Every structure is written in C-alpha cells, then in structure tokens.
Figure (cartoon, rainbow, N blue to C red):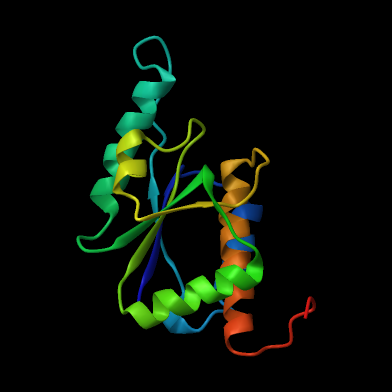
Length: 156
C-alpha cells in the first residue's frame, strides 16, 4: 500500500515542513506518505475563487496515480476519531490498494475532486488553515499507526 497526499500550496512556512517531517519520519517506510504540491491558482479579476478551485482540482486529479482510491478532506466528510482512523488505516493496508488524500486550497476542493473521491473525511467542523491541515494529517496517520501496532495509547 502506498499513501500519497496531493495538496494545494507550494510555499509552506518552515514550521509546517518541520511538523510534517517530524511525524512522517516516525512512520514505517511503507506508510510514509509521498507529498505532491500543486501551485495555488491566482485569484483576481480574471479568475474567480470558484474558477481557481476548478483549475486547482484539474491539477490535483492529474497528480493522482491511475487506480488510486481517493480520500478527499472536506468539511462535509465523515468524522472519525483516532481509534476509528486506526481501523480505517488497517482496512486500507489489508485492501492492497493505493490511496491519495486530497487537501484543497483556500476555497476547498473542486466538484470534480469530490466526485472522484471514494471517501470524504472531515478533520473537524472548525475551519482549519490548509498549512495546519498538513501537520494534523501527518500526526493523525502516525497516531493511528501506533494504535495498529499496539503502541500504548493514552486514551485507552
């Protein structure tokens, strides 16, 4: 199984890169996500927010390898606790499929990205800045993996 993350935005602050790296390097090699960044479309007079989202969505879908199962991070997605995510991670590992997780830009994911998704996952009802979503995703994948290998978990 391979996990890829396709995210809008190419110039992340250092704290984002360090946070993502800190959690990803703790994961076993087989579960370390491959990160692919898509340039943020320019918004302005010539390109509305909705049009920018569509442009970004096209680029995101081009970056998803053929055959991958797509998980869209979206506010209206399914909410999962960490233990439920651990179960989901085990299911992904057992399926033998590869997965691509999509993180949209400031205007969210395009309708095409949402339509391509096999699953929608909501990290929170809160509005989270997209750079922070990267760190949260990396941390939650790490935490879910620790549960799957029976590492002591503070909530049990």
